[in-house]
Every structure is written in C-alpha cells, then in structure tokens.
Image (cartoon, rainbow, N blue to C red):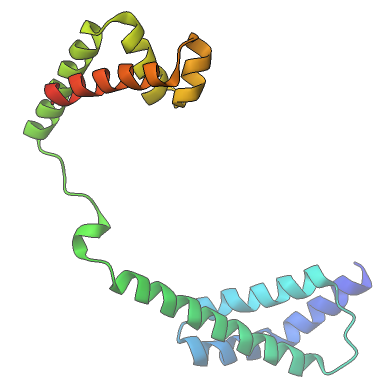
Length: 163
C-alpha cells in the first residue's frame, strides 16, 4: 500500500462514523449520509491532497457543505415536481379505438402520398422524412426554391385533406 492509501484509509476509519452522524443530523437519512461521506472521501482520494492543517476540521467542513448541497438539490427537485400537474407525470393510456383511428389516418396519408406525382412525393419525403431544407432540395433536383415550395404546399394540402 502506498503512503497516500494508508493515510486516507486511516483517516476514513477514524472519521467515517463521526462524519456520518454529523451529516445524518442535517439530512435526516442514514443511507444518504453514508453516501455523502463516501463521496467526500472519494473526492479527497482523487485530489490526493497533502493537507498540513487540521484534517478533522477540513472533513467537518466538507461534510457540512455536502449536506447543504444535498438539501439544496432535494429542495429544487421537490419544487420542480410540486409544480407539475398529475397529468404531466405520464400520458393517459391509449384506447384501442384511438389506435385503430391513428392507423386508418396513417393509411389514408400513405394512399394520398402515393397518389401524388412522383416528383412532388419525392420532394415531400426529402423534406419531411430526411430533413432536407428547401434550398438543399432545390440544388439536388435542379429546380428553384419556389418550385420546391409549390410542390411542398401541394403535398401538405393533400395530407391535411386526408386527415
């Protein structure tokens, strides 16, 4: 074992219980306190600090700060969820009727798109499925952006009529 490992191990054994009790008084949960103490010692290990001052006082300050940070984050989390309405937690389950209706609408849109002229359908799919901009489509197909806009308007109008 290295000197650093021995020093931190000895410090952990000597201070763990005291720090856990100190944090537990603030946060009110022994498991959380234990986790925070482990975090403190992990940070101490990662920093590999060669402190010359009072290590117990330093660890007490770290424990106080960790408890305060934990309480702040818990308060923020509670405030966030307190502002949510119950219907925001999860969506309502979809009924079988809604599923059938959605499938029928999708089939209708597919049929409407299939009935479009090939070029209009291709432009629509490039824009809506592949995310290409009007200018990218215009360059790729050798037409003006205005022509792309006209094709898109025609395709969107057909889709809207179908729904």
